[in-house]
Amino acid sequence: QAIVDTILKGEGEPAGGYLEMAKPWTDWVPPRPYDPVKAKQLLTEAGYPNGFTLPLWAYPKAGGEEQPLMAEALVQMWGKIGIKVQITPTDWGTWKTLAYARKSSGKVNLNPGYSIGEPWQTYMIVNLTTGAAYHGYESPEMDKLLGALSSEPDYQKRMVMSQQLAKVVYDNYLYVPLVIKNSIFGVGSKVGEWGFVPGYSYPHYWEYITHAGEKPDWTK
Image 1 (tube, helix red, strand yellow):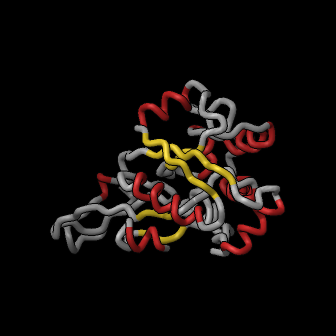
Image 2 (cartoon, helix red, strand yellow; image 1 turned 90 degrees about the horizontal axis):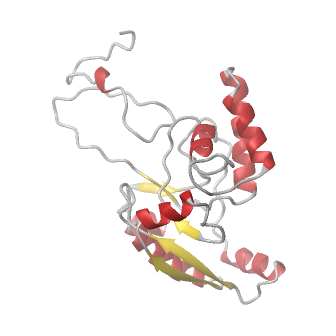
């Protein structure tokens, strides 16, 4: 919440799970509670009573120009529970080269995420399968689940499977979501209703934008 209030100037909300904005596929994902005492307890139980050092690659990127500022905030926030964040300033091109070459193992990066449809589409295209564009997380379980999703024509069945997929991502901490940032569009007073595709971060349906006072005709 502090990141939303200060760095994002109120334009967002704390995130519960990765691709939480891709509802209704991830409606079940609960936000993780803010509990530093419990966090320190879990670190101790895991064998890190004094915490550990976490190298964090941070870079500005289109749609995420504030990423370096968020990294600095994490240094202070996570430092309170013993995690010593060491920032590695870089740029998107450098990180992308490492990821495409499958050389990003053991490295943590701070990166804005985007939804491009149903969650499985984003996961498969981006970085959660052995055949993904660039390296992220790979496992036989994930490959099997995403493979089944990509070939399932029934929407309701995909809905159930996508919720199973979201649970795997959530339970295994494949991502540590921070905030959901609002997308802000400058629209003139002459522009009317503008529909969006559920689950997509990008604007669509340009052809259906109406003049102010008109109703869009979705049948055309």
